[in-house]
Length: 279
Length: 287
Ligand SMILES: Nc1ncnc2c1ncn2[C@@H]1O[C@H](COP(=O)(O)OP(=O)(O)OP(=O)(O)O)[C@@H](O)[C@H]1O
Ligand SMILES: [Mg+2]
Image: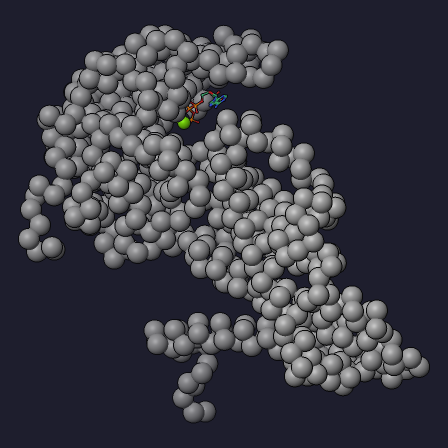
């Protein structure tokens, strides 16, 4: 037998160990991507088989036709315009809604008296779905861009604030006590102890709110919108263009997915200290 | 910056920086839920801690040691009586009373260096001096090379050292330490005891130290306060007349063993009397 170079008894050098770690990470990523892509391919394949067996191509357009719809939408700009219009609404509504939720949620969660004042109001507003505010929003603000953004903002706010407040109320007291015995006072403790230790909860809220924002988009664009993915969905249904409906759905899904991935990336960077973060 | 650092970058802990402490008839109740009688955890606790002294508190689990230390830290307001620092009643927590908690209190979202600098920032030390002081203390507790590690990357003993470095760097008038080495393995514990003793010998800060390790109490202290349980009361105060500086060999001396055995008997008998007093059905301890 030749000298055993790869056998289990050979001592691995540090460089090899480092390479081994890298390879393990790379392999995990490869699996993650290939399985994810494969799953999507299976779904598309199943759908394609379904369209073949269907006798109504207007209701079940084959993948090629959906792709054509997408290409046409990009060419004539209608899909791009709709996407940008929706993105803008979601970005502004979600941004403002969440910013307010983080500020109000952490203040009421951290400072007891702010909680006594705000808890009844916020907790009474929460069970009302954001969509239920649409009539009131139209009455007060008319039918316009600000009305649509406001509804998305309300939806984001309502779904974000719960978890922000919960995080503030779960800050381990020993950290607060330690900071106090080092001379930190109220504002410093809020900024340097309460906020960082609530980051996991704040991000849970941000991610739930992202879903809520996109979920409310379609409804918000029912408010006499002439653009937007929600409008496209509506129009596609009215003019019996099933492929446009499906394209709009896919675009919403993909954008939501990308935004969530971005949030996750920011979160795991902010939580690089946490022993609970999966690496 | 590294080379030209002067000794004065490290806060001076000796003499002038420290103060006497005292417990004056401290009594403390905890609420136990509506309708029930409150729980008396500390009853009429009085003792003096001379400036620069190392005083240990020992007693059964649950007898109120942590509560007493939190009262000294200003984190808990006693129901009656008060704790004193330098002759003045303690009413609030601040950087004069540094505390090492029984639990892991190192901030997990900050690196080792940031944890140590946190204390300096909180007490508004000049930005220019922070780095040097932090580096000095990280070095003294033997964590050089781990400045940028997060607590999750450290062992339990290393995290406790961060906690110690943080408190030493914040330069309090007095140190309150609640079983700081309790959760550590025997070897790490011995090593940290040595380090603590060395530091204390150099600086002579007043220390109030909770432990239930009698060897540790005798080895480190000038005075050992024994608390009886339910409610916590001062059972006795033992002066430890072993000369300093003490070394590992001190543990082998006759006097050391006498004192620890004496303490052990005392705590044993307290345990027996308290058990027969509170629970008549408790089985007699067979010798
Ligand atoms: N926040 C609290 N609320 C109610 N009861 C408490 C509280 N903190 C402590 N106690 C009670 O007070 C008593 C003393 O607790 P303490 O933590 O001071 O004991 P200890 O002597 O430090 O015990 P150990 O050695 O196990 O750390 C215990 O009976 C405990 O149940
Ligand atoms: Mg305790």
